[in-house]
Image 1: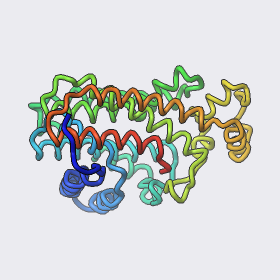
Image 2: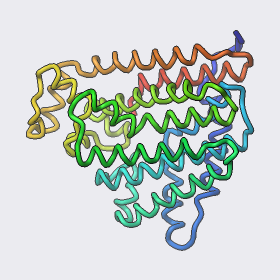
Image 3: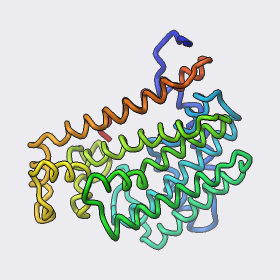
Image 4: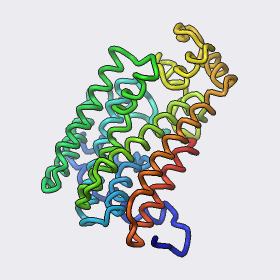
Length: 317
């Protein structure tokens, strides 16, 4: 096993590629007229950039690839994610995202829909630029799953835990799985299914934690309101667990957010879900540990991916 002399900080590994990804997104988000103002606003709203980081780290874990190609594809993944958030905010009637006004809040739903479509188109322009890696089937499948998941949630919302896993796969986990898989494609890896499973497991854990934060989180730290899931009547994991325990009935929508939050806290639902998240992340780390490490760059990538798993477990935003 390759040893490194000092602890690898996630920031050290992520900085070079994410600076290039940010620059690529700024470069590609150009248009004419008023659309340019809209795109400028979007490009200034930087998120956690976990998805492009997963592309880079999984490529490095598998021996690396052409850096410029990794940057392009990672930027495409982030653009796709940005587009999905724009559309989510319209569907959810959200006013805030990361502490700033949403696009639909500033410019209206019609402009926001078209801006989201523009981001999707720009993402696929980057993917088709690198058609030799056969990225398109993976990315089109992901967009279809994300759309199917949102439609199904709007028309027939999940109410049971068995349904919940399909929902969060479509909402979050499939895109993280795709980010890891395309990282492998860029490195010509033969372990694409394992990489995708790694991303899916991280995605499950991320969304489960997100659902908890909507009841436990601090809005100042989150950069958005808490209680949105309650306001929209969405069955997320804290409510599903509470119903399974028999401390919540199906007519919970008659309860205020404060009343519902009290039930969830008093019955320690957070700890139950934290155990589930820990088990899922343990499976992700088992996959990581199965990769043969031959270089220092591979070891750094493995450690950084482990740090991402640890961050998901402890995150508060």
